[in-house]
Length: 614
Image (cartoon, rainbow, N blue to C red):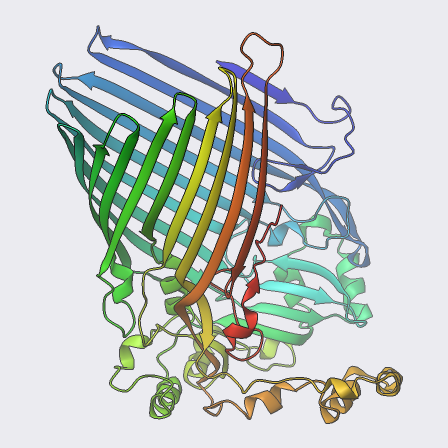
């Protein structure tokens, strides 16, 4: 058992470095932590059944400042994070050859966003606060057989993960961002403004058989992972308001002395002017399933006393590749080879080559469901894209669409004039959507990489070794976003970026005038001008951008790794020195990567955002 207490100031020492809690959130001098846990283990049946269990509890306390002086409120709010973590394991020997193991892990994590921030400057009131809730459960059963000829390993595992990213502290209701007449945001009250409640249930089973035949050790196995996903997401069904208060209305709120208790109803009751209003039309839970299948065989071949070869063949299939309009990607056969040569007792030379397939992240399909719509206008746009050849002929269009979340912004001058979600459902088919995400009409291919490595290791002494490795990876079918309704490419006329034109732009009274002149000079292109070049015109109920996740990206990675490793042995010191010289180039950095100019990804091929040369 153990306990740990961090009492905070004034007992804690000052630190010149920024500090964060277990979730990466910044904390201040007020931060406190109370942590305790324990473990127990032993034999349930002597020499046959053994158990282990542990539990840990952590409580973090942090103080933020709500700094809203215009509304007469400056005060402290306290956030409490709580972590409940536990695990257990039972091992049971059935016979001399057979053994079983049952293990489990669970976690319940609550991370507070109470409002405010460290050191002031934040105008979010506690009524707009939220908590991030994470509950996880995992239970696994494994069986092992170790015979004279055959060995077997099998496992069955179930896991459940619930992630409610923004559970409101005060329940459902509208959110209100409050501005004064200068346009300054002086307070945020009410709901967090969104819903993101994700649930994943996963079953996994794997089995491996192994047998030795002379100089060969053969292995064969199967691995299946099935996951069911559900996401309740979207905007706020009760509406998100941005309002402007008059000095008299601000004085009214200050006069009520509500302090940190100020809520959305207190502001909306004043019926202030509305700068912007948005409301979610279709909050719903949606999702699908994903199953990953894998079969493999492997031969570890002792060719001679100095040379060992490992040859393998693996097949992978991801059911998410069946989404969209391209059919399944089921021909993912991956050969692999590894060689290990020992020319003498101190040296080893290694070489490896193989094809490795990955999976489609579920978020790709989730985004295509959540940001989708089945409006007649969108289907009409898709039909036009198909006529233009941008969507292949023969692809059924209806399966590419889905009734996802949709937040609209109906015009209203005052709060009392703003309609509820029930009164503007017709906007689902008439509101222009800035970006619609549909399922890919050409489908999805599993990402894969071709990997090579070669290395040399030298054992200079019993405590000192040197290792040098070369790595080369080429990856294909990487994810990125493509706009099927992209405007034509635009290149600024840099010849007009002269000192005289810059001075003329600076002399104009407002940004609208500057944009107009810059457009005339060919330095920028307005949204309206860009929209006019899109393949399909914008229509009410349709989309401006009609995007898909595509598996068309590629990357190249090369690296030299050098490592010097000194064990302590009989000396008083030990060390490990590592150096990497590497280069990573690609035309996509993540699944939300977009080409910088229309869909010209070739122009974006270059050093990755994740490139680390040294």
